[in-house]
Amino acid sequence: MIPTFDPMRRSLFALLFVTASSVFAGGEHLPLGARFAGMGNTGLTLIDVWSMRLNPAGIAGLERPTAGLFYQQHFLSEELASQALAFTVPLGKGTFGVTADRFGYSLYRETRTSVAYGMRFNDGLRAAVQMSHIGVRLGENYGSTSAFIAELGVQAKITEALWVGAHIYNPTQAKLGTSTEGGVPIDERVPTLIRAGFTYTFSTKLLMNLEVEKDMDRPERYRFGMEYSPNKVLYLRTGISSAPASSHFGVGFRIDRMDIDLGVAVRSRLGPTPMLNLNYRFP
Image (cartoon, rainbow, N blue to C red; front, side, top):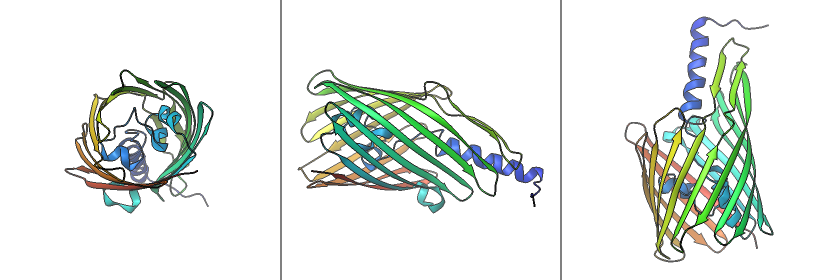
């Protein structure tokens, strides 16, 4: 039996899709990784397994195979949780990376799978390309849609203390488009983002990030972050980001081959978003 849908329910599900995709997923395209989040979602120049969701050029600096697990709850809501896996393998001057993540619950779910290749050209230049598949499914047989997204990233050393980075997300302006079984038309453009910024390392214990992000349809976003390491085990982080304004805090522990990172982003009206990731570097 094919269910019938009144105009009110069609409108509600259309609103659900637009709100969820623009606020939490496609619209913001926030990076994953508690280290980055603790520094105001900055880290365009840094080396990390979670660089695949911020600037994939960062995986080119990894020297060992690395695996990561990530969990996040947007505004402490179980229905708005994200889970992710990541794995990278260095091969010569290049590094292959794979990541998969999921967001949402039964009425709205988004999945993303990415494959990246980063190359280290010399000690001061790294670049990467990445392809991602985004899938969106609405509950109660309202349908699904998907799109393929391209990404490009670069990191360059200006001086021993100064690195710059840039990242382009969805330069082809791909769209999520379909008409669902419930009659809800979806025509949502995946954002095209340009990110750029720098990292200045004051010492082996302190670094600072300053970055800007431009969505073609939105005002610029500015992000600032710092990481302080009093010793080789403990890392303390903080940062701020704009549009919307958020405060960020984090702490990390490096124990042998294991990294444990915790972070929280706080919006004044919506509350905290805590997150945790575990990274393991293989011998």
